[in-house]
Image (cartoon, rainbow, N blue to C red; front, top):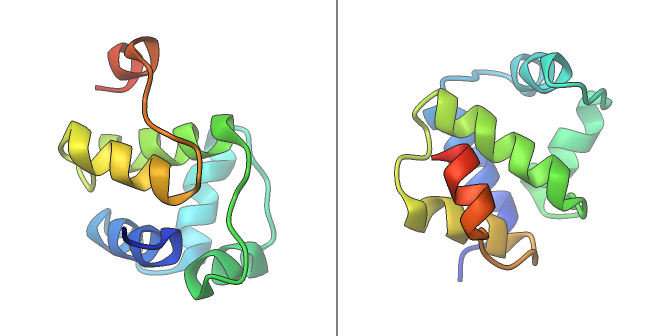
Length: 95
């Protein structure tokens, strides 16, 4: 299984967020404020988000920007954070 850090970086770049600051701005628009250093930790693999709601919000951003295109990609991303797979309710909301 791929690591959260690898997938976060892959989808951030695919979403055309050239910097973690740009990603942070998109996340802030969804109600989450984090220091840029947090995103660097996520990319390095020294930390990862533990909140399911936060990871679902990140998924929402990546889906809106067409970085995550399939249910498989969404589930793999969520599982990489140790948060299992999407529920039917979450699938209906996100995809």
